[in-house]
Length: 421
Image 1 (cartoon, rainbow, N blue to C red):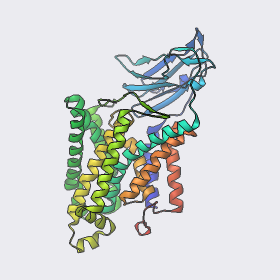
Image 2 (image 1 turned 45 degrees about the vertical axis):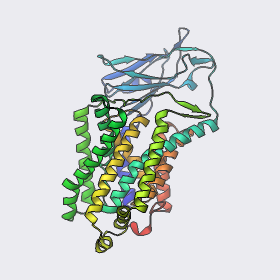
Image 3 (image 1 turned 60 degrees about the horizontal axis):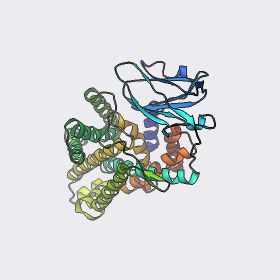
């Protein structure tokens, strides 16, 4: 029941950030001060009912062109946005001439931005269902792996302390922001900036435990008040990020590299590096938990803290290490998430938090390997579901799968019944 309560609360907190329903061009985003607009024509003839979508800075909206080929979408802030023309809605024989139906645009000094697509005659290349399935499978695998890095930290913290840490989202954001500061603002090589960001993320986890969570544990504060404190901490950190870094989205060095083709699979060098890094790190975490002394102590504390303490294990020291490791993994996940989105923004971790908790709950609360399994399932489902569902619905689809699993196995896939209740 508690797990379902968490998922319901998270869904309510984040539903407004994921999508905006479609409407006619002159009805979309009129409450905002900034507008992206355009006119779709071919041979001086207006094309009506062509679908246009805008995505960026945590905001999504879509519309269709009117009888004169015009469209306009309001956006909440200045920044960089992706404008996508759905080629399937163009008349037969009309294509985007440069072969790219996605345009990145950024606001200048004015409150309006014009985006136009160049159309011509031709035939559209169609991709078969199998090729789409394979390509999205690998994208889902990539997403699931980076999701696992964040989910394992949440699971370890829950297993050793009983805390469902909503502020974990801000640890994810922190890693990406620190990478941005050291690579873009200070000009360090990206690999060095990432290492520094991971180290600082671990230090932040240590500091939060020492200053906040350990004193609260010693005072015997119950789980529900601790969860409420984590929500407050999440809000405080998130708006602190916005105060210092602003509301726009920035790109890390190397973002937007051209994709490499491997048959039907299309992945960028960054995607390949992300998958490789995730696999290596996850194997290292598995070795840490299964083979090292402190890893075995961590599993013992997660299973039964009182028995572990009676056996001579320093529970406080184990929890401190878990906070450092969990925060470092979250920081790395934030860096990879910034490349996958792509972009770094003040609320990027919050956008990912719902899926992190879904993966942890699906795999089994408190078990790191369950978090890995749950993350892979969620990542694959989110990407593959777009073969049948609109892209706005992929988050909802992942939650439906989560609820169905919990109905038949409340403890999650790898969880144990004694954890529930």
